[in-house]
Image 1 (cartoon, chains in turn orange, yellow):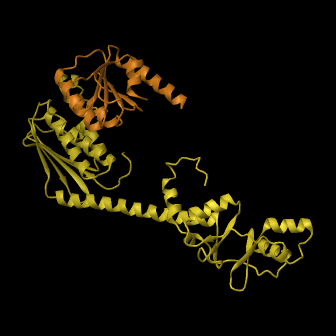
Image 2: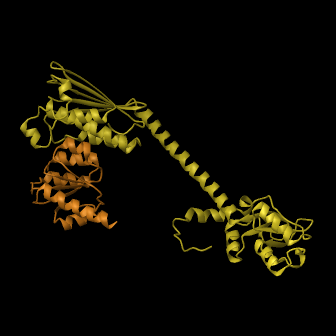
Image 3: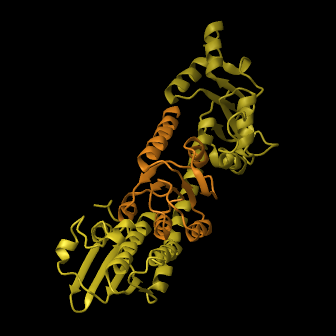
Length: 114
Length: 315
């Protein structure tokens, strides 16, 4: 599913949007080691951790899209780093549970269509 | 040849049917008859050899006619099956010269709705040197495609050879990093650089992923829990070796530290999503070998080895 579809359907705020990549799976987690161990490459990562290390983890794991939930503050230098590394940053005031549910339903519907 | 299927997918085959000559694909062993035979004799031969038609040749092997299974059936039907073929066989035979491409053979087979083409020595000659059917052409195509596939495979093997050469060259040049304690801003740097470095060596994605995770966790451990230290990443013929040394304070109980969920991290560290007690367990999980030496006087030395060859799935 195209990232843009998720952004529109879940009404996510685009902080950095550089590539409309194809999303096939997702991971939700706020513990860096957990994300390091379990997230899949190219997935959409839902987290409340908006700091430089999130970008580092995304880079190492080849994660191209991060959704920050609970409307967390995203510092300017994180935005700059994400732009430099071509990582999409999205934000929502919903909590992780709600957003995960929405994205999950979208993806399920898409799979059902195939 | 009909072209209503995808052109794109057929490019290789399209190319090949122009390249392959009739003589490469034809059967050289031709079953044929002289014209002094009856339809019944031909019918018995067709049955015996499980073929659907035979050319009729003269003494010099020049083609003078052809009898197919259809002709035999007609002969049965019209009651001349025991007569000599001379007066009934079709003398207007579609042939193909041996130096033509198989694409023209395919065209003729389709255009004249025949199952086989006698192959002549040359365009001006009537001398038969072989016979060609669609299945001969398919067989030849498969053989050629197979040999192309083998060449591609060899090339891939050579590619991995190149990365082995690269590895030999970098063997003596390990990566060295200084890692500061409590410096969250540059954390992840070692793992990022190391990842790019291994990508350039042409190592498989799965192995790189594991090297990156081990580097990241080792780096974060120095950053989160120590007074600072250094990391060295070495490559030797079969392995990536990751050394992480710190200046202290050392781990009182290494066995306990390796237990998933065990942590000594502060509230501040945990709020950033670290210190979940997963660092060392992650290293242990993704490295092929892990050694930890720790002393409360001199600090901790970690050595993780990741095999660059094939390894079974993660534990």
